[in-house]
Structures are given as C-alpha cells and as structure tokens.
Image (cartoon, rainbow over all chains, first blue to last red; front, side, top):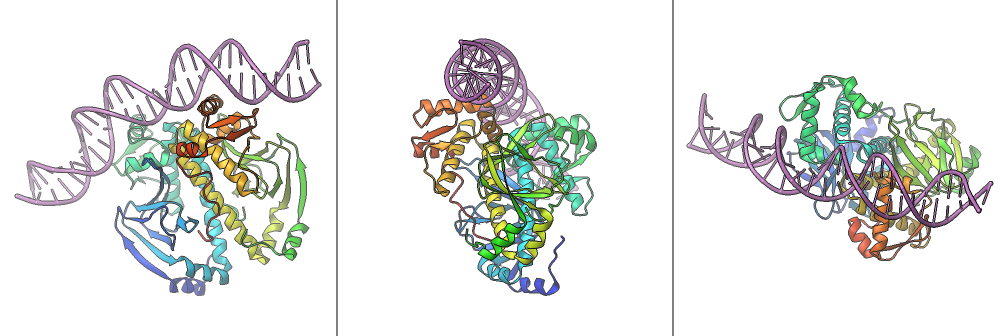
Length: 227
Length: 227
DNA sequence: CGCGCAGTTGACGAGACTCAAGCTAGGTGG
DNA sequence: CCACCTAGCTTGAGTCTCGTCAACTGCGCG
C-alpha cells in the first residue's frame, strides 16, 4: 500500500491490539450488537453478511488477510461476520484506536483507501446483483476470486472456494441449486473444472470473462486516493 | 457533520474550486474517462450508474447536495454520472485537492466519514438487490427517500421522485414495467398515493416498513467514525 | 391541437426458485 | 482399514415471479 506505516507507528498500534485465533464457524461480529471492537484479519476467510427478519441472508463480502472489519452505525455493528475457515486477526478497542488516530493521521489515510476499495467492490457487486444472470454471476465470481489471489501473490489457478455453495448463493443473490447448476454447466462447456467441492480451475479465462461482462475480476485493483 | 472545517480551511478549499451549474440530462462523469476532477454537489439530483457492454444499466445511487463524486480507479472514473434535474456543484482539480489534503487532515476525516456512509448504504442496497422482492424493493426505496428528506430537514411527505420510472428500475434491479406495477399495487392497497409522475405520499409508514423489512429507510443515519 | 415521451396495463414466456430425491465426500468410530 | 454417517452437493420436476413484447393512455410542450 502506498502510505505504509513506519515501524514506530506500527509499534504504537501493536500496543493496543490483541492477536487471536478462532475456529471455522465462529460468528465473532453480530449485526446490532454493541460495536466496541475493530478487527484486522491476518489469516483465513470470513463471510460478512446481513439478515432479513425472515432469515434471508445476503453475504456482502468474503474478507481475507489485511481486510478491516467492524463498521458500525449508532454504536452497533452494521453486519455480522462468521469465520468460514480457521481465522486469525488483530483485535482493537474502538476507543483506543480513536485516540491513536488523532495522533497518526496516516492511519486515517489508510482506512480511507480501504474504504474506497470496498466501495468500488460494492458498486461492482450492485451491478452483478441488479443486472447479471446466474451464469454471469458465477463467471464474475470465479474471475474475481482468481484475480484477488493473483493480487495476493498467489497463482491464478486453482481458485480456492473455502465457502459452501450456500454461502456463494447468498453472496450472488441466488440459491444453492442455481449455483450448483451454473457451475456444472460451465464445467460441461469446458470453461472450468472442479476439484472436490472447494476448488475450481479456470480453463478458458477469455470465454469466462466474455460471459462475466469483461470487468475481469474485481477490476484492476486499487483506487487513486481521494474519492 | 461532526468534524466541520473552519472558515480558514473552507477559504483554502474555495481557492481551488469552481462553481458550476448544468442542466438536466447532462452526463458530466463518464466511466472510463480520465479522472481529473472531483465534484461536490450543492444542489439538484444526480444518478450515478455503471453500464454493461450490452447496455444493461445499474444505478448505484442518487446523489444530492453535500455528496462527493469522482471515485476513480487506475486514473479513470469508476462510474458515470448524469444530472436528472438542473444541478449545481463545486469542481476541484484532483491534483490540487491532493496537495491540500496533505496540509489539512480534517478533509481526509470528512471524506472517510462520507465513504463509510456510502459503504453502509451500498451494503443495504446489496441486501435489497440480492434478496428482496419487487414489492419490497419499492417499499424500501420510498422509505429511504423519505428518510433522506427528513435528514435534510425536509418534510417526510410528499416524497419527491425526480427520476423516471426507468431510473428507479435501474436502481432497484427491476424493469420500468415492474416498478410501475408495484407502485400501482401499493397505491391500490392504500399504502401510498401518487401525485403526478414525480411525487408520492406515504400513507401508512408502518405497513410499508413491514413490507420493506423494517430497516426503515437508509438506516438511522451516520456511522461512528473509524471503520 | 397534435406530437412525443413517459407511464400504465395486459398477455405471455423464460429464468430462477421451491420442493423433493439421490449422491458424494470427508470425517468418525468400530 | 473400512464401513458408516451426515452435511453438503447435485439433479430433476413443477411453479412463480418478474421480464419481454405490445398496445394504449395521458401529460407536457411546441
């Protein structure tokens, strides 16, 4: 990231944080609960989601190492978060971080960058949810996961799918059955192959991108600082 | 807003900005164009949208006075923006604002606040697009507009609808016809009344909120500073 | 007065959801 | 080491909501 913190600044951060590890399946943020803490993921994958009164679920994102969690509104968390693999994170008291931020504006700049990137991802997701077909959603999803892996210095293939089909469905605004059918269809066309339930290989990136709508993955990557 | 700028700071901002007025229908930001400028709306309503290759459109938001525009990625705008009423705004050169931000961290804090609020709105919209029925989307939309009006010190009713049915459809992930049918249906049930094509009155807020899923409008309002 | 666009209404069809069986894989215990 | 067990996945059949296509209405403006 372009405005990295200095060693001294990192040390100050370290002073107020606690490292922790939780197992898969643990819900460590609940929408509506008092928002006292912030989390910075260091490993594993987390699903962030919101529920409607009747239980319908929308996953708003899958978070990985480096992502921040704990967005709040009116003193309570704006969403729930559940580990879908074993997860490690740093935990901060909101009040402590607030004081630190006053002294280290750089933190604010970093957070602004993270927020902007999330906002752009959210807008891409709105296009997906509002206007794409099931097939297009699945293609976009696979490409986005692959692109994210590359950005993290991992190979583009195979694409890890730590979440269940149900989680994918709740992320893409579909049902488990439709996710399964679409994956099977893409496999049948030779565009992807599936390795067990939690990995896929993209065999024809071009064709998949054409289906997805050509915004190849999450998009190029970072935002340009300031709005 | 909680961290307002001082008069001196506002004056410094004023030095690098230009006020402007554009008429309805003008597209003043185009997705993919070089992102040299930032915009701060002072009046009117703007639709922000993204297009797919085949012309499908997703409106990601309707912006009003006080909102910032100009999010970019890789040096180009991440979305398009079109005035749906006559619009006034302040225009900044990105390069100039960047220099100013280095001197006035408060600006960054304000932008972080705006970004966070937009992010929360985007997450609510993802729930709407991914999991709500047409009827629920329309109910949510009307309540959100009404709540936003109240937040701006305007009456809750009637709700102004400056955009066309097509714009509403592109915002809610529906078609013009479905928007029209849903509005007619709610009117038939006595929950709302329609005044011409560009205003609605909410007659039964409770019933509408029950349909919408009870996150009454945009939600309480502001975020709590820091993630 | 009439043209034109926005909106409404209707008939029909398609894509995704629901409900219901089977199937697989990974983990457990014998 | 293997058989079982169960959650998760796949597949199928039928349904329904919403999209598509088309006609009509009504308002605003020249």
